[in-house]
Length: 290
Picture 1 (tube, helix red, strand yellow):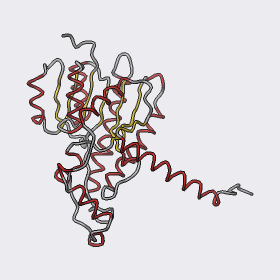
Picture 2 (cartoon, rainbow, N blue to C red; picture 1 turned 90 degrees about the vertical axis):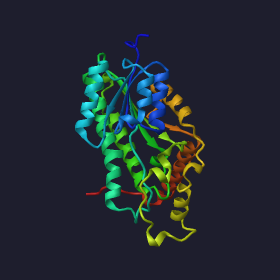
Picture 3 (cartoon, helix red, strand yellow; picture 1 turned 60 degrees about the horizontal axis):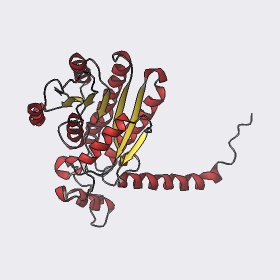
Picture 4 (cartoon, one colour; picture 1 turned 45 degrees about the horizontal axis):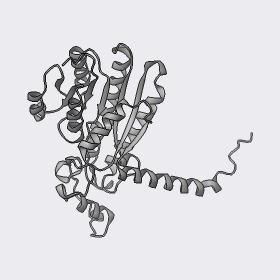
């Protein structure tokens, strides 16, 4: 099989969850993949399964800018171009806004916002200045909590809100002649370890939020369920749709994935609409008079 005419995907956070699911699905379709992750040994089984002409595994910690540029350089050296970037690396932590230590929150912003933003900026540079012909697809992995926050995931939600803003700003800045398309994937809950308490840093409960009937305590109890979490989304099915989205020129800037994500979007729309209507009485006359 010749891979010369197959698309090249660059995937961050490829070790598990939706990152790994996307890598596996793309490989199954016959496309080429640059799978990046902090511990390459985590996907050693895929290295044995697929030829080096189709799969390149690169060590990458997205909080280190030099590793980002080096990873893209290795991708170009191996495959000469990058067509799709699935910007997926990230993690969540559990904790009340008042109780989450600053260092825990900042570490999450380093990965989820700065890491993903630096990957996005390098992706755009490669799409524009390296690819011949120019062009590429940037898939920004956001979340339904980037639409409407979830109790106990306030800072994680904030990282996704920030990613939404920077992605929309970036998309609006791109010249049409560059043939670069940005899509925000606003993911609902999928059955991966990403939202299990075992896989997330957990801040000590703030003493003011420990009452059994408090929203924060209920949220902690929910995420502590681990593998029993009631998340109906199948990561492999999500990967199938993500592959389709990458090929769909008509996909919008935002694509919610999952019925729960669609419900969050509808709920937030309604909340904003009500607030906007209620604020009309404050917006009757702001005309400046000299």
